[in-house]
Length: 84
Image (cartoon, rainbow, N blue to C red; front, top):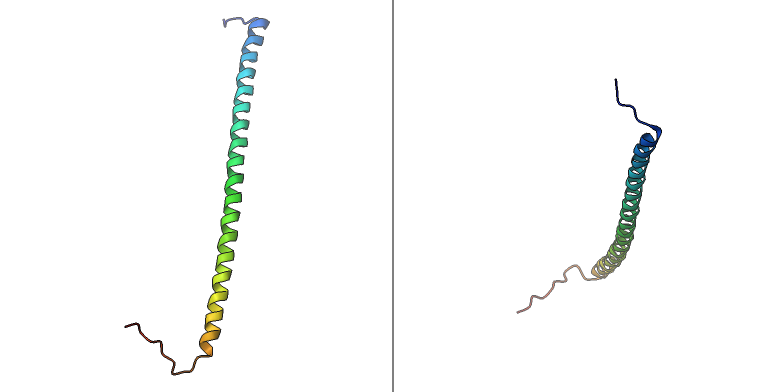
């Protein structure tokens, strides 16, 4: 027949399993928290860079539109002089 485990042995075994489970849960939770913080920092950086890109793009668009308006005012036979 199989070995008989007393109540104390079973409690110790389950207690060890429960301790390992709690340790694993704590490690996993800590990892997820740290990873979440890294993701939040990356998202903030992404939003900052995107805002900068959009701002610079808008400024360039305005400059191009201004130059196009200026070019419309030039006579049709206007030519740029080449540097000698």
